[in-house]
Image (cartoon, rainbow, N blue to C red):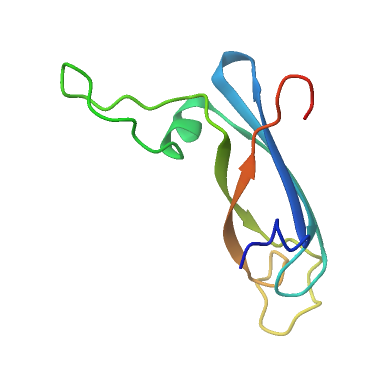
Length: 109
């Protein structure tokens, strides 16, 4: 299921100084339909682990591109506690999923 194409969720990523990636996902939880609004900052080490390898360099090590068109991140529903039987005590309906969000250009598109 492509939550972005179906309009259930919206998301974007942008590059910030010092190779930091900032992501924002908002819309409705695919399980319980409660609102999701998640703003996350990904530091260089965590941002790199989401990149596909671009191939080995001359020395044999893998180069990981920091500039790409999309960013994959994990999202967890965090609606208020007590709304769903059997849900985690910390809140949310218990669903976690990965979503691929597009990077915004510098002009905001």
